[in-house]
Image 1 (cartoon, helix red, strand yellow):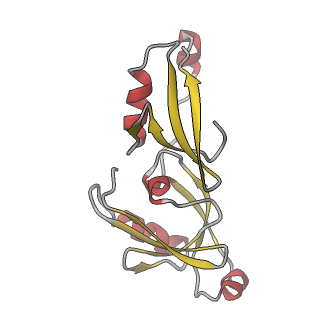
Image 2 (tube, rainbow, N blue to C red):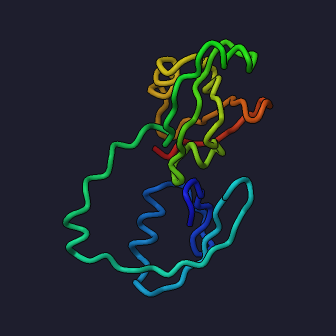
Length: 161
């Protein structure tokens, strides 16, 4: 696997949440070869991975997982000049996407500029955080993003987290 791969299936089963993916790996005996389908740079790629084991010392030393950001997205502001060049009043640029998050499931990619979440305009990080804070598990999600100069609408029927 590579950075920014989005896991779509694990042994033929569709991945819908990070928790589900982790449970599936935990339930697979070490040494088992598994088939996975991932989204890599707009293309589906089939991989075979062999599940390994983790030494108890490694588990004990492993730091606590960082707090996950809602939707699994890390964003940064765009400045007035960038917004003007894009022909928009503002937005936030996606810097990173957790590959097993609702944002990844919706199709968000690093580099996308989010300008709307559901019916809420996103003009800066504050408005992004406000729109995301209003989302609840089970809600539908519609994102309006600029991607390589084109407006793209991304949808998710139901948030998993």
